Length: 292
Image 1 (tube, rainbow, N blue to C red):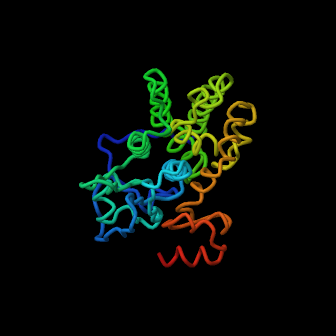
Image 2 (cartoon, rainbow, N blue to C red; image 1 turned 90 degrees about the vertical axis):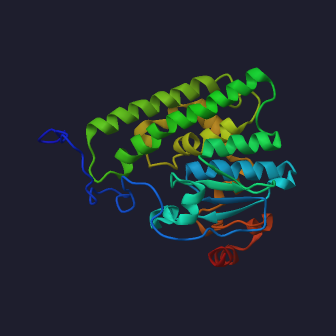
Image 3 (cartoon, rainbow, N blue to C red; image 1 turned 45 degrees about the vertical axis):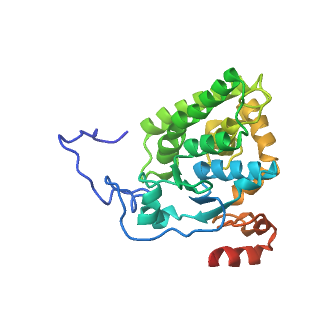
């Protein structure tokens, strides 16, 4: 604990240099900070994103739809570098006034439809193509319940635990302990449910799995915040089994690569315009996506 407890002021004011990994881009105001048009490709869907857990949800769904042979789900995906502040350009803000990735424009019909928030994008695409969402009313309700479980629970893992454990300029016991407890409770919720279910909705692989896996699958796989040992994630054996099963899907592996700009070069596809982009040699892939 700190030597002196923090006493909130009567009126909060923004200190621009408050430290932390994202302090250079975070502000208490919304809106565009500079003019920049978004690039446009030839496909019905234009995606502007980054391969963070929230971004990966949508590229996985696109790749799963294409794997089903749904050619109308073709998309162009352009990388948005959030550390450089790309999300504050006027074009991006025009699609997503919240300035968070991912953002998408559906131009498959007569009117262009901007969609933001990853959960909304999953639901929009699943309903549009009648895929990865159950038709039975009870199963559909279950799918949506788990989808929105992730929407509500994810911030405790990301902005809560992840921030104070991995990104905060100083480590304090109380917030780390508070959010670690909640994340472990969430893992237990998933573990108990998956003990009797192959996927979140029984035997059906749905958008609920695609929403939850990039966060909680990455966590139990040791790919998130380097916190696997700290949280003892191996104890959640049913979540581990589920995560491994999903991670072995070819469409999931492709989806993880899209808009990725870190890790092994062979696992990066910074901008995606065609299925053949995945087949390029590593150096060709890097050069092609940098020029896009």
